[in-house]
Length: 192
Image 1 (spheres, one colour):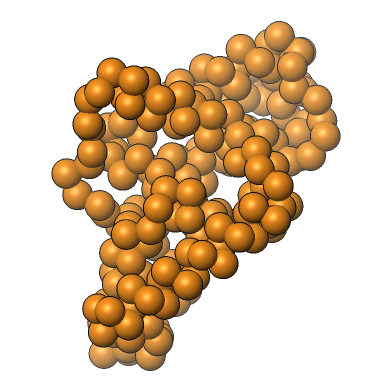
Image 2 (image 1 turned 180 degrees about the vertical axis):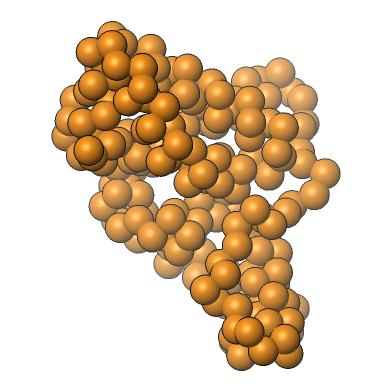
């Protein structure tokens, strides 16, 4: 069954359908949230809030099978994250993460079995994560969605609530900034 069919089954009262659906999307959704907030405890809280909102919307019949469930729930997560940052900003509390670690994002297919190549590749991935952390939030978000979640610019635009041109512009500026940062810090971004 597709994610969309499972969502509709859950809306009709089938709790097992939701368990299956959750197991399918939880890793990608948590990685997205963690990438945006860079704090595991906060990411867990926002992940739970996202699914509570998704459950309520499913039960209220607000989910329509118009596309992929993952995009629908990622849009909810995006809004939860924005609401969180608005609340933090409005209360004048600076709650930045103690470490900017995108370590939960791994790409085993990139790493070769040869240990020397693996070390070079690990360093490149570490450098990319550090450079991404220096990007403004909206640029880091579009880079993450495009390269780590492999979403199209149309899908990114829909999730973030902006036009496709805005998504493309953010990516363009992100790539310009990543190139500039790599030159400034003498970082060679080439896999072995």
